[in-house]
Image (cartoon, rainbow over all chains, first blue to last red; front, side):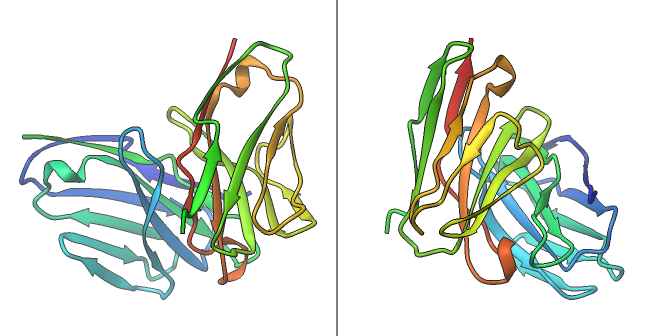
Length: 111
Length: 114
């Protein structure tokens, strides 16, 4: 079945450094979603990418969807302590196929 | 709107006990799902529903039952709890974009099975 792999599993950065997490699917995706989960909290939707090569920005966060629609990345510029949490990607090969979540990248930011 | 609500927040069970995790949403979303989250494993789909009266199995359905008698409610039943079911359980709802559009998650239920 469809698999979604996410790397790295953990990332520790100094405040102000950049951070990137990568997501790779074993199959072509119709869309990919990104979620953030704060420690002790629940996942919260950040963004959805649908088009090949799509790039979207939310303030310091940049999301990319690969040309082949099999990979994606989330880049955070100049991390802040408020960025701490686990970032998940989730993809589906069609609207009728269940979302498959990556295992997440846990980000810690050292002030 | 309360969004997606889950009860209880925490539960301790003994092996072999049964219980029901409650989930309700007030957003009139068609689709609802149950996930479990274990350390290092991400979120895994247990069961999902595309509307009242319709349910289907996800990746890890064994040991769990669901039903969807109304649009609002989607309870998850553990038939005979096992230590391997110790986990954090999240309910989510979604609408449009096929079955798995943007997921709105509840706050979660933390379950410990002894």
